[in-house]
Structures are given as structure tokens and as C-alpha cells.
Image 1 (cartoon, rainbow, N blue to C red):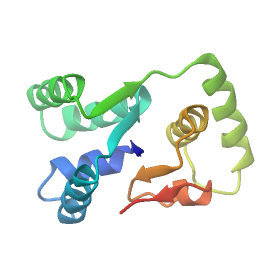
Image 2 (tube, rainbow, N blue to C red; image 1 turned 30 degrees about the vertical axis):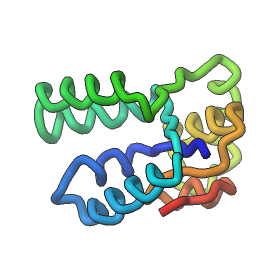
Image 3 (cartoon, helix red, strand yellow; image 1 turned 90 degrees about the vertical axis):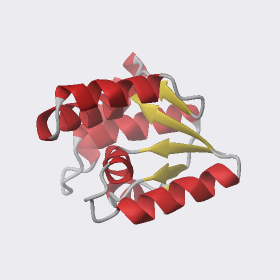
Image 4 (tube, one colour; image 1 turned 45 degrees about the vertical axis):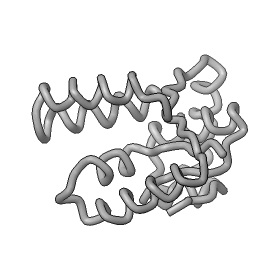
Length: 134
């Protein structure tokens, strides 16, 4: 099974002070045991690394980038022009929700790749119809 990883999951997994750290770590290990492989969007990688840079340090962000880019378990998927167009449609569709463009772009990438499952603590994915695997 391929599972999409969202920014808040990366944060929880890497930060022992995060309230969801234990849940994230346990969930990640359990999915690894079942043979799961992971996908994230380049947009998620950027959002995550920007947060690490601002909250911790640039050095830590570079270390995280290296770990992610060299992972054999995770693919970083670039977005395509068609994904951008779909993300705009989703953003407008959810005009009554606080769903941001990063999530909408993730929805478009997941749709294109045929992914239904996501590791996240963000209910926006459930609103769009994805299965949260935590």
C-alpha cells in the first residue's frame, strides 16, 4: 500500500515535543511492518522544511532534506500543471472551509496518483474523502 504523508505528520514524527509524536511514530512503524511505502508532494516537503528552518535551524532542515531525499521508503512527487489547475478548483470548492492551497494541491496529487490513504492529523483530508491511517 502507498500512503501519502502530510506536513503535520512529518512534524509530529520528527519532533519529540509534538503532542502527536508518539501516535505518529507508532503509526509509521506499524505501516512499515505491513510493507507500506510512502509518497509526499514536493509542496509538503517545502512546507515542512520551511517550518524546520524557521522553528529549529537551517542545519536541521538540511539534515531532514537529506534524509527524505535519500529515503528508500518515500517518494517525493512533483506537482504537474494539471495538479495546479485541480488545486484551484478544490480551493474554490471549499470556500466555506479553512482548507488551504497546500492541502488542495496535495488532494490533486493524490487524485492523480490514485492514492486514498494519508498519514495526517489534519481533518481536511477526511473532508475531501481520504482515509486517515492513524
